[in-house]
Length: 297
Image (cartoon, rainbow, N blue to C red):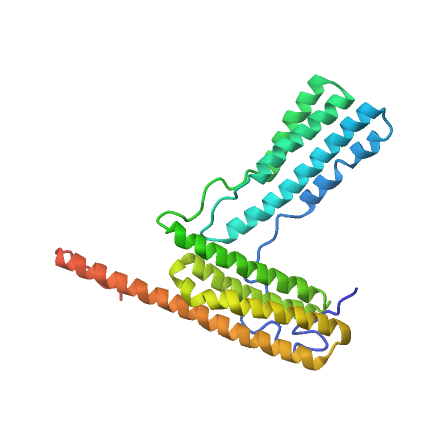
């Protein structure tokens, strides 16, 4: 379904304030790696499936196994890139439990080897396997193999934070999926803006797990309520386009944005206060040891 363009300079204007002054709508977003190269991995094996049905049964089965192996490799590669993007988006993160991209390289080599053996011979199969695995690895790279930012971090507390953040991300994804059903670009942008603000709180809590207690209600109860409200609004608005329901929902997003922004700023202020206290304590200890420090003007 076609969507009407909406924005600050569109003919209908932007009464809901989709993009407030000074705020970039693409703040915090990066270009995804899951694009054309991944899609090509799914289309590239199709000739094997076509060729399989013009061969004798044993060769046909071999080609189909090669086709399935390459499709599995493409799927693992895509999931590996998605996991890597999630890993890179966080300052503190554990490496993916399963190295999907590396497995994708191995399966790509295996699939090409099976296809080479069916159509040519053992030598050709070996050449295809090495070249396929090497080209896949150099194109997509390895998975993250080390934890990031975990030095000196209480792993138990960080695991608690990770569970809360994962739950929050699930609620945000459900909100995004629900609002897409409305087929309204302004509302989608509006929800995306709130999701960015909510993710800012997630990143703040990940940076300092001590903030979890203060933020847990926001990342749990409030996001759950926002998710349920979005699902109900999407179901209602998709049927009758009720302007009152739209106004109420946008007012809810306004309230959520203000509260989440204020809470995130409070968390950051508390962190700054803790840092100031630590600096003053360190200064006093150094002065007692006879070390004089000049205060920055």
